[in-house]
Image (cartoon, rainbow, N blue to C red; front, top):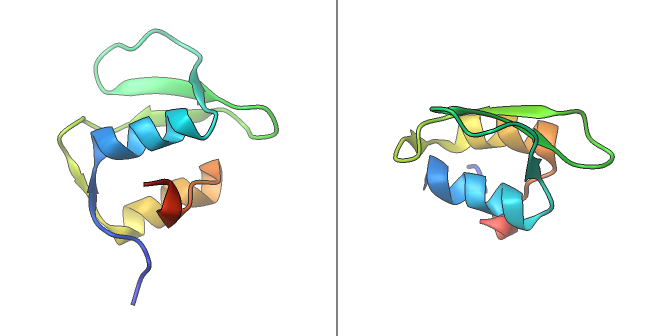
Length: 71
């Protein structure tokens, strides 16, 4: 069983901003490059109302440091 709940992409994106990620490029459509000290840049490529499942959230967390508690 996964600790990750399904969540809307907009909620996950806002959680990334709360934990210190900042947009590196202007937001155009569904692709935004994010930056945070100590991490390589991460490209956010999800539509705001898209539902992200546990597998997608684990993949995002592996590259960004996001935890289930951040949501």
